[in-house]
Amino acid sequence: MKNQKLFKILPLFIISGLSIQLNGQAQESQYEYLKSTLTSAKDFTIEVFNAMPADDYSFKPTEDVRTFAAQAYHIAYSLEWFSNRLKGTPIAWAPGDEDAMSKDELVKYVTEQFDSMTEIVMNAEESGPFTSGVIGVLRHNSHHRGQMVTYLRANGIAPPSYK
Image (cartoon, rainbow, N blue to C red; front, side, top):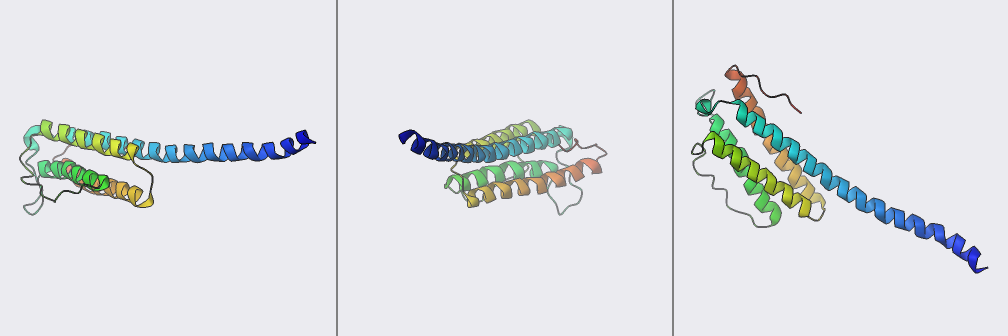
């Protein structure tokens, strides 16, 4: 009699255990997806930065837009700004001179900021507003990176292939 009850209850325990395990895997997968998306954006952004020769970082197609260097700085600085907001320690928007850094400094800066953002994502507790914030960062980054691709094309430089 006890064995019959156990056999009736055992499937419930197994199903409950699988449900808990799968739920944990879904959350891990979401974070892994965000991590892989940030890594892909980082890699492509660095390829775009590297495609423009250092001597042409001062290029801008018209007077009323940022230089290539300023676009690169804006991407890196906005990652730092967004990261601080996501951590709950917002900083004032005060980018300073967007044309002050060299190509090598900008590649290093954007690499550090993507790595910082990825670390924040991997250590964050999942929530809709947090996920929306990360997606907003990626959209913003894509917008400015797309402008930089146009700058490359205006200089006769084939942009890196989108991944």
